[in-house]
Length: 463
Image (tube, rainbow, N blue to C red):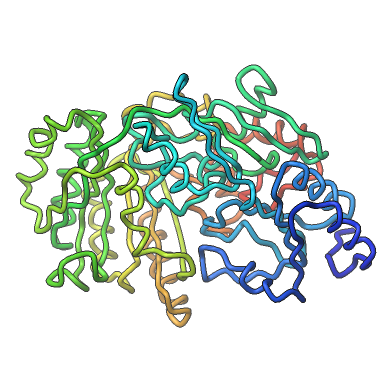
């Protein structure tokens, strides 16, 4: 029988709290309301208790406590998950924000990172050494959630997904044991966490391969939204043959305000956000065909890599209302671009947008079954996000996102990148996101978490 924190005696809670170095936060505590907040302000869940872990021992004690008391358990790293899967109602949340450290090894160009770190903290530590780990496009994203789901971003075409650069992880398993996983130790588990999400245990530290990235050339180029079919067709042809040093993701959006110029504010655009990591002396030549398309706003230039990683942080702070939907695409046909034009011409709020991330270059050279991330043969990972600060607009942005997705989905490759899924999409969507890898993941889940302790996620159910 599932228990809640309310079912536990004060003595049980007191004894557990005393076993931790970190704090326990209960609904009666003054800091509870603030502790409940996550990146997506649309999510309102009320855990029975937070365990604010500061070391691996705290995590082990908390996993054992949840298992022994049959509590619903959620794991929160950066709290950035769109579906709010870092929280649960009435159960225990293991918060990893106290497990933060970044150690750069310049002899091997590797980086060890705590399970609670954010990507901006990693970039801050690696940048002085001229190194970077492939990650996403927002520096406030948690390392854990992004990595375990896959990790698509500015460096994907050059250096692959984040999981392609994961060398090792330390984990606490459902039975409270602690293991190190890599190609030679618990190799089945190491395979599973590279895209299978948080189904298999709690990662307390990651070891990544870093790459030489210091200064990049990039930024957004914008065109009027009515040019979406033309620019999308050009982009599709261009990015397929572009050098792998050049990444660009396609987007449609409203320019909400600063730091963009006044004359662009509140107008609808399509665009591409570029990141070139190659020889800067050749950047002008590389961008010639891009500028030949005569963007209205070519805001491109040299910048430190952390600058492009954090370029949109200010526009998308924690606490906004978010609703997400994602799909993979093999092509950008006229039928597809027509749907994008239709919905991008009626974006409901200034922060709502659509992105298409290319899965080409290095990201495509990994086989569909080499990691759980089963869509290496897709050309793009797409995401539609309804975003707004005002809870009054939650229904409006959700409806736009769902309608957009439903009209576009028939043209998709099926499935979805699990980090672009909400928690209301159903088990068939989870299975579709892993394709033929689901059965293997289910077998590993059954081996390491047969009672499904780690189920507040895009869940792979034990056999």
